[in-house]
Image (tube, rainbow, N blue to C red; front, side, top):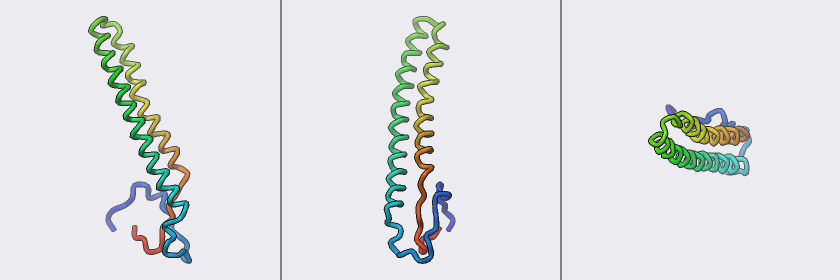
Length: 109
């Protein structure tokens, strides 16, 4: 087929003698829940990152209007606030590194 899964390296073929319902096992449920909660974690962390950037951006605009020499100092704090989103993505990538999905024999890639 022409479409591929992004995390194709996580797909492991099932043994030849695997039953038809081998797709519904504890390992696959763990992988699905782990992937879901990693996505949820990235979303919440990036939402908090956006709020932090908005608050520091507002503070940067107000402080620049009051004293133009403070702009670079506040801009550095805003860069640190935007880096929080990267920590969420790195944490999720680290979390998804320890699972794989088992495929049945009749599953087409």
